[in-house]
Image (cartoon, rainbow, N blue to C red; front, side, top):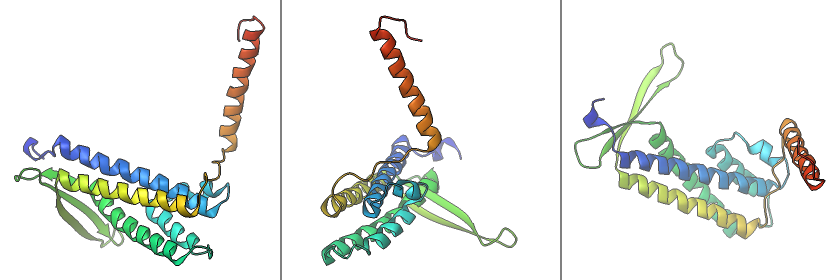
Length: 195
């Protein structure tokens, strides 16, 4: 790629904004799934699951809450479909290789993949033209969906999600450090030099 094909900083900033907003959506969705499951270890079960998987869990688990009105299920379906649509666009934006085109603001993204096994695999490429405005619009749409997820949580599953549990090793390190702070504080109160 020569210098004239390098994407603009504004375009790169737009890719970053899409990526960040999507990560925030994923966290909001993970917290909602944990609320719906309503179990302390739900955080553990939901860690490492991508956004599509979280959306699938959200849809599945909400279906077991028979007390929810039909309007809640309709909202859930709309959120689910929006997340599926956003996921496809975000994945393209983040995983494509980009070059600047000659038209102002236009950038060509190419996402290539192998389909099938390595031996005899078929190669395919997906291409699309995006502008910084397109990226800003996608980021704004992601924010709207994230706000819809947060509103759904507040409307049907109010209260904080169950506390995030600590892994044994992390809890031990935290407890040891915390105890050290208190030991030093007791020494200071007694007029001694902390260890």
